[in-house]
Length: 213
Image (cartoon, rainbow, N blue to C red; front, top):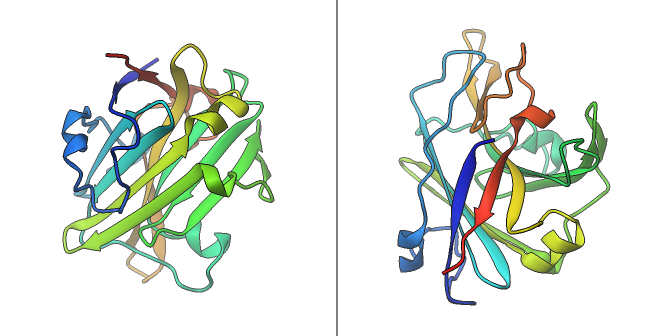
């Protein structure tokens, strides 16, 4: 499995504002190892980084894209599901029963849900509000999504074990087709080796390894 090393920082020193402007982010490893295994990816780049302290796991996505698509038909899951977005999936074990999904668009609307094998989704489940904060920023070059998840919630959901969090890191990029509809390109850190695009499978996960000093 691919491993991303998450650097440790002093407790409660990182402020989340969606702009990635804290000097502490300089301590993070920058992950650029993203691809679209199923089709040619548009000319756009994705970066991910993470940090942690004793209270929170922090994450930040940079999407370099001046043609982002945000559907505003409604404010709920239906619009998020057909908008550009970044995604984090966390699984309890290799059986993905259950796993937990965070899908965040550039605004940042959040689609969070609990899932089981074969795309069996519990869309009524929500990440506990006190344990999740997500903010974003849009500029001419693309957008940033920055957030934090409490360590307590990761432990309570059995997602943090021996300093490791089994994680999928993804992105959906929607582009306009010739008939003016929008179609997605699916972008992933780990190639799941599936015939068609599928993030909801055990082979799409890597590991976030929490480093100590």
